[in-house]
Image (cartoon, rainbow, N blue to C red):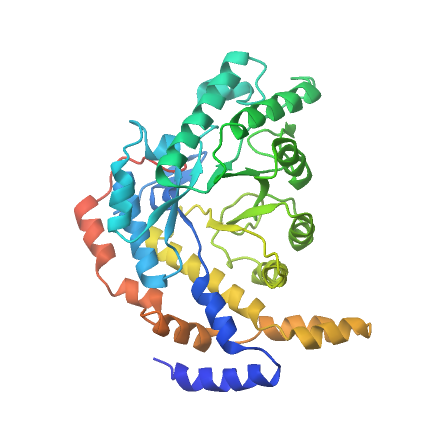
Amino acid sequence: MRDFRSEYNTLAERMAEKGIDIEAVKARLKAQEIETPSWGYADSGTRFGTYSQPGAAITIAEKLADAAQVHAFTGIAPAIAVHVAWDFPEGFDPAIVEHAESLGVRIGAINPTCFQDPEGLMGTIANPDTRIRQKAVAHMLESVAIGRQVGSRNLSLWFADGTNYPGQDDLIQRRHRVSESLQAVYEVMPETMRMLIEYKPFEPAFYHTDIADWGMAYLFAKSCGERAKVLIDLGHHLHGTNIEHIVATLLDEGMLGGFHFNNARYADDDLVIGSVNPYQDFLIFDQLVVAESKPQAPDIAYMIDQNFNVKPKIAGMIQSCLNIQRTYAKALVVDREKLAAARAEGDIIGSEQALIEAFNSDVEPLLMVVREEMGLEPEPLAAYLASGYQEKIEQERGIREAGGGLG
């Protein structure tokens, strides 16, 4: 193992010279929370098929157990997001709350499953059929009720609603149906719960999607009320989109409620965060760090939404958490004084260099010290791989009929 304590001392001295409070940076790293998704522990795949892995979770109890491993080794993943239809196919059992707590985790965001019912061919909350819209709203209200029981703060909404051909439906009427459906759910939500509205430019609807971009999500959220916010999924953008600009705008408007972290090479690939464009991830976190430092810091839910088709589920999730943690740390050590001075002087090179230097910083010694102070192994991924848990679940569970995930 590297001599990370000595390296940390050198880094701390360098940070002090820049006026960066290393203890404050460590405190923010220790307070970081990343929510992992229940479906990330289950077998998943593409429209062409589902890929089975030995040991993949099927039941909510198994998913919680696997998520507890991620939190035990990283210390920053205490909550697990659930998908109602996938995780509670026979109905919600309140005993799951106590079971999660016994494992050292809790239920996080509640995700209604509004995209797999065959009746939703023409949409769910945008469907011309009143009965189908009411069915979708009823499912969301059921999700709100579950959220009440588990103490969840976030109702996370994504819809596959849209059309595939011009003339298939009236676009304005669909917009009104979406708004009315969301408002009906919002009115029933408890004061402690927020509605997070996600957007996506295309797929499975290839002509138009009813909530296609951040502006549409913003307008729907505003029509509901102050506890409705926009959720950004990093993979839900067209090529060339400046996501950090969207982040900055929503932060400035007080409308950014949450993130789904992943990376995309082509479209909504749901690849592991940090695997494609880590510099863009850093620039996004740069905006978040600045916002966090303000007196009225935004309340943002950080969640992973990735499709571990071929990667081992738990190890891949730990890797994702560590990539997020590393990116956050780099954004925390930006020399803000140097950046501000360069901007004030119109120094384009200096401004950019302030960011590049932070991005290129080796923050591993800092992270290893933080983990040690939290009572964790300094190298979480290696520690998990050596723990024997993966071999244990592979032997006990084997390869089974896929369920409870993306297929």
